[in-house]
Length: 489
Image 1 (cartoon, one colour):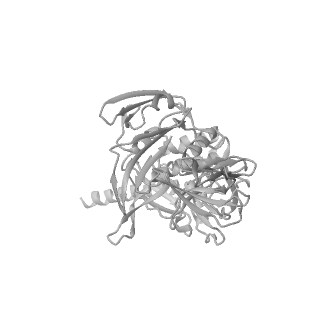
Image 2 (cartoon, rainbow, N blue to C red):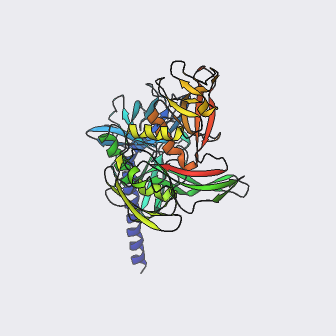
Image 3 (cartoon, one colour):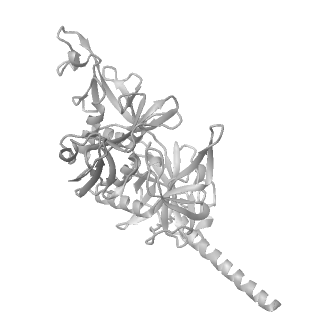
């Protein structure tokens, strides 16, 4: 009996040892595909709308990584497409980087520093693809995405550079849940929840399965509000963008000159809340059609349906504005869209039309549609940058193209022209502002931000461009006592 027990223990020890060696070998290969992403030059206003072998692990921990001059850092990993290496990371890691050369670098397993630049990405899903400016060395390896669907309980490993101080940190855990939706402006749908601890600096690093395949891009961590109002980190609740969504975005970036293809409907859908101090009281029972953009694909079908509630999108029941957005995100350009609508009296109607494609011109249309809802504001296209004219006097003042000023019938001047520098949602602790160089970029920033019910502009007086920028907040409801959580799609 004693001999049987000893034999069993020996076999168990061999299995455990074999498993440990297997996990070590898998991770050792993956480490060479992980990089630290560092930003050295940032924009003054807003973010941009995104051969050696042996024991690799020994090389990874040989000396400390020096990021002393970097203004921000995160993690990333290498993929291979068309025979070339590229870096996948989170958009929020590099969105604030300057567009000038020498702004973004990655550090490889042996701390070699390579310059990279943004190839494309998608701020909504918080994903960016970087391409190498300097040729990657032989120490760099790459990883592939899993071909199988991740399952609840699967063992996973997170690899990254937490706090920008501990490169090639590996934590383990299991997949806890799938298809999580998150709050915030960007990165809302399609997350794996897992227990492999991540923290600031892990952003953009890979979540690896036991085969060494990427099952997610580490993107977010969970917080809870303590009784005293402080935010408490929930270390066992971490989120990674699912592989199918990640691969679709990467495929679109390569196929569409750096951008992700989306449908365009030309519709303003929102859900309103009454605001009383810090309290919010629901005003709309569900997402409601508040407007339809003229000349859009939806206009003929929906212009008479303003005020109707949206109850289904392509056969899927939706209960609120965020669920509507989630279903809109699944619509492909140039495909049929079917909405079930409910009137205020309770009658239902089914309406169908064909979606268009969201391109630069459509983003410009959205920007104009939203900006000119501010009383007294008209778009000014004469400056070569995003500008608007503002007149408190309303219609009694007419704009003079020659003088670029508003003038009434008596020749009196009133109103100003402003340049838009960036737009988004501003708060002191975590500003989410995107740089606006073109009207289409303003449209993109509005789409990212509008669920918050407000949109902030950094503007400067066109007559004195060197003056300090001003912050202007637009309430999308037109009323500061009503919060209208809005999507423009």
